Structure formats: structure tokens, C-alpha cells
Image (tube, rainbow over all chains, first blue to last red):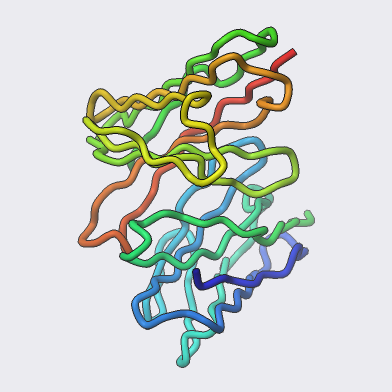
Length: 111
Length: 119
């Protein structure tokens, strides 16, 4: 399985942008990049996904490197409610959409 | 957005008893649901894939006779922890997949989790 590497933790100030990096140097051509986040004591929630082009939705933006070996989840204005563990996951048809969760990045937001 | 519920949200039981956890997709039909387990300060680990009308597929190392999964309808999957022991204490989370054009683009919607404590 193609794996991802994320920093264990990051800190941000409230109302400032946050860039959460993810390395996936062994990504295959058919792997989609998915991001989920898990707030404390809750189940994960879907954030965004993409293949090659950058993606935007109401929650975040996803910037994908041209060689696809890395990506960055961008929260444009962090709020205290964005404090969570963010997981970058590669998803492939061959894996039947199973999500393999790594360690993720614990984002702490300071007021 | 799609909503997945779990019941109960928490349960405390005595060692040796069985506990059933329900996972429901409230506003969509889910042919496939997934069950995860999460120990404190660890990541989620997939336990099994539950397919409506067929037997669940268990991940390596997960005892299928201990963790019974039933997916009898398109909106309900249940996980029964049989003869629970303290080491089964964990946060159990289910998810359901909404097809959107291919497994790689499908989104999974997660339940809020069930915290099981076995005394």
C-alpha cells in the first residue's frame, strides 16, 4: 500500500491560515488523495479529496504537487473548532475504498 | 450531508457478557459499511467490511467469532462483541460509503463512535 507521511502535530493561531503537509512519494497513478479529520471523541469526518488538480470546497482547499508526491490541506482561517487530528489517506479502486489511517497530524489552534 | 448514527454512544459491561452496537445510515442506503476500532491515543484500525446480504470480510488478526457482524438491511449494520473482556475496551466506529462514481472517489461517512468499557 502506498503510505503517507505527516507531521505528528502542528500549532496555529486562530483566524490564521493553516497548511497541513502530506508526503506520499510512492503514490500510484490511480491513487486518490483523501483528507479526513477527527475531532476529539468523535468519528472522523470527510474533508476533501482530489486526484491531480487542486480542489476547493466549503471546508478547505487541497493543493496537489505537480508530481503528486505531496499535497497540502489548507484551512483558510483556523477556528478553535478546527482543532482535530487530520488524516491524509491514499485511496485506490484496487483496495475497494478501504481507508487505511496513519498517525495523522494533530492540529492545535491557539486563541 | 449524509448522517450515520451509532447506538449506544457508550456502554459499560461486565467481563464475559456480549454487547451489540448498531450502525445506521439515516438518509441514504449503504451497501457497504466498515467497522473500525480505536484505542486511546492511537489511530483507527479497520476491523471488517460489512456488505449487505453477505458475510463480512474481516481484517487479518480480527476474530470473526468474537466480533460478529450482521448487515441485514441497507441502512443497518450491527457489531456484536461476544464474551467481552477488558482488552476489548475501545472506541468502536462505523462508517458507510456513498458511491460517487468509483471506489476511489467514494466518500465515507462515519458514525460518532461507541465507547465500550469492559470491567
